[in-house]
Length: 176
Image (cartoon, rainbow, N blue to C red; front, top):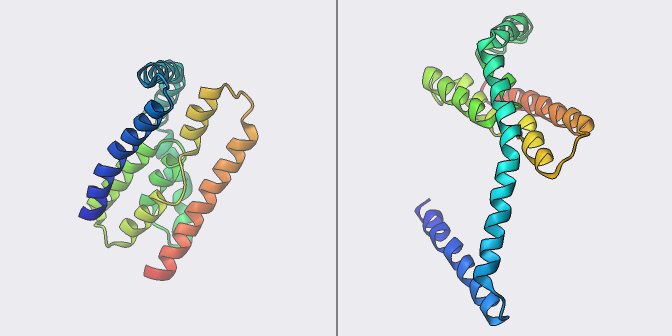
């Protein structure tokens, strides 16, 4: 692990140095190009703010309105029937919405049940099983102005569901 940390500390500055050396060799205005790229990055960040704000407000409403608790109560009997603990439901519901929220739920589950417990292993596997569909669609589609995202949303949510099911199957087979 120390070797990887040391390599990453060297590679990024080395990459920047190589880019600057090539730009200087080709007699390009490297500083002007750097400033121009910074302006584009700043304008992109400003254009993303409304999308991020909308998503964060939606997540807060989802959690504070009690919908999350209602969904847990709704799915608990079905999951109990197939011997899946209901404690994992908040992670399954927040994973497609927000990576940070899902990471917080995962950390809470690991803290409560331990990393080597069934729930800890399942939460860790689910955390890495798929991406945050709604975040990706909000940020990336919003940044390039794509308005029609229905098919991407359906496919993203389907892959989230498949990732959750596969994670449950693998952990149940290996550690259940």
